Amino acid sequence: MSLRVVTLPGTGLTASALGFGCASLGSRIGRADGLRALAEAHDGGVTWFDVAPPYGAGEAEAILGEFLAGRRDGVRLCTKVGLAGPERSGLMRLAYRLGRPLAARFAGLRRRFRAAAATRYRPIALDAAGIAASLDQSLARLRTDHVDVFALHAPSPADTVRDDVVRALEDLLAAGKARAVCVAGDLNACRAGAGADLPYRVLQLADDPQTEPLAALREVATRPIATVTHSVFGFDGALSRLVARLESDPPARRRLQAAGYDAAPREAAASLLIDRAFASNPDGVVLASMFAAPHRRLNLARAALPPNPAAVQIARDLLRPAGA
Image: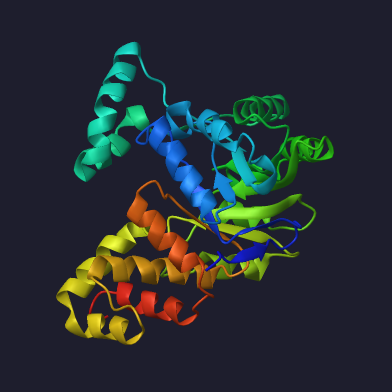
């Protein structure tokens, strides 16, 4: 079965409804394993790839660029500006390289790595020259002359609407270096970007199963805007919480089974959450990290199905505390 394809409102871009998030490409995931996963996802129908300069300890764009050789025409590519990798001493860089393979194997150590200051992204000041230079550097690493979407990465609402920032993005559109520009941030920044007389045609944000942020955006949007969502499994520990609920609450498990999710708790929970994400964003792209083969198979299988609106309410109900 083929992956569902969407036409992103307001952009003219068509893409797979499932996108590949490359945040760990080059860090937790090494080059060879990453290239293999990217190729398998693309062979399965994925055409949207999301990256940023600091991803993968600064290696993700270059590895993705290597993958894109001979494939660029069939791919939709999003990169960003606004965050930089952490500042590390030589000793910290060595410790990071040595610890990375262990962090990839052990979830507890991986969480500690992510929480450490030495692994956190840093915001950078946005100005016209820096925005243009960042995109040029990304294009060189990605081995292409344009991206389909260029996003402000975690901007403040004020930066999102600043005249000089907006003009810089419009100049890049006019130069053909980006086909669309985007706000990739929190709900407040995306709300600001949805306003009238701004060039943003794509909004990217985390998707909370309980608050449904896309509904809030649709209320303020003054024009057709495409949406890209992420963190559909990890927002506020959604997957872990749902698995725990299914393992401890037989009525919840029976409700999910009756809705067609008759698998072991973890697979059933993951299937429900990705189905909910597709149903909440039926005309947009849902990002997922698919470097692990079982995750990739599950996501590809669910992305081939039509959206299931019932999954939205089921997920919301089951993520509430039992008895609430």
